[in-house]
Image (cartoon, rainbow, N blue to C red; front, side, top):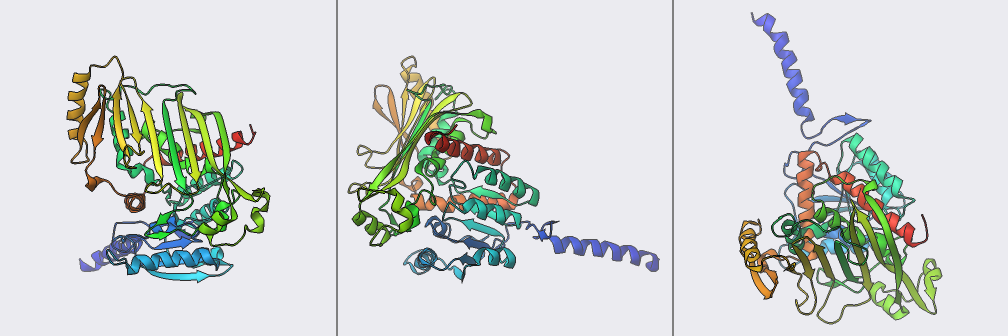
Amino acid sequence: MRRSILPIMTLILIVVLNSCADNGKGNKKDGFTATRFTGAKGEVKLITLDPGHFHAALVQKNMYDQINPEVFVYSPAGKDVDEHVKRILGYNTRAENKTAWFEKVYRGSDYLEKMLSEKKGNVVVVSGNNRIKSDYIRKSVEAGFNVLADKPMVITAEQFPLLEDAFKIAQKNGVLLYDIMTERFSVTTMLQRELSMDPQVFGNLERGTSEKPAIEMTSVHYFYKNVSGNVLVRPAWFFDVNQQGEGIVDVTTHLVDLVQWECFPEQILQKNDIQILTAKRWPTLFTKEEFKEVTHLDSFPEYLSAAVKDGQLNVFANGEIVYKLKGAVAKVTAVWNYKAPEGEGDTHYSIMRGSLSTLEIRQGKEEKNDPTLYITINKSVDSRLFADHLTSVIKTLPQEGLAIEKVGERSWKVVIPNSLIVGHEAHFAQVTMRYLEYLKAGKLPEWEVPNMITKYYTTTSALKFAKGGN
């Protein structure tokens, strides 16, 4: 009896051992093994590729159980990588909430080839020079790496096919390519979206016109900025639109993403849902003194000489797009000024127009620079009944401690407790944790990839339109 069972038991044991050996590794595809994540401690191994933007460091401002503290950095030698390492060291040595990252840095001209061949990690963070970002992304997913990329993933219509191709390769290779959309985690933005989905609060989204769009968003930023307690030193290439990208394809990425995310939540959007109506771009001007203050360089580099007019550097950091998304007119505007007035900083404005009310986020002097959500009902709506319903709806939202305050005859504002208000830098941890959830699930929501493609089609098409292209 035992002699007949042994071969069968041996076969079962081999199958089980093979299955266990694959646990956490995944299926082998085209010469590499795609990692299968389980949520286990330290299973995510980060690689930071050519970190030229401070957003690369913000991903590591916090520790995560699922991420191994040993991080591999591949970069050409220079100030960009030195500043990145300095920021991580700052997080490791700060007085409170110290991190414990161990950075293993490779500096060399063959940094990309070295990263691709050594395969030290399974998730690549890409945040730096945008001219080469699309190529970085494509080669990373092709080699079997998951990629968490800072915006923008692509900055020209000519490069856009590279990004589309990268998403196809990522799907084929079983890896996740995702961009860092921090603005979705702003509490006022989340509330604007949630209230717009209540038909008794918002009604239906208006179709809008070019003069009065259904949704408008404006984002104002400043080159002189304080990050993690220090004045930010920006690399000179940040002022070169051929490397950083123009404003119309940079910050507007967030705005176009929010338009899609709020107006058509969890719906799959396609390129043919987009129609560019108008698009324009204009420069921010810099003196040599202002340029030196934010770069610590005494003069404009040679590669910026073509952008210098009458002694001032012209940076096309500002852009506006008016377009239709599934028939609804949207307008997004990105503005970059040199330095914020005393006591002020980056601001976000947003208004959604519905058949019953408008939902408006303002962040001005009246709001003491704090984003505040206002609800204003249309003339045909009964004020008392609306107030009763709004009060009951607020209590059902997932954010705890919210209240409604009447600020006008037909207007209210949402009072948000301080515990729900976190700064922009904290949103990077929230995005990272969401990405870790997707890695464990082994997939993104079905609408995310087509909507990322549609988003970047919108921004790159708008730039082409603004520059006189078809």
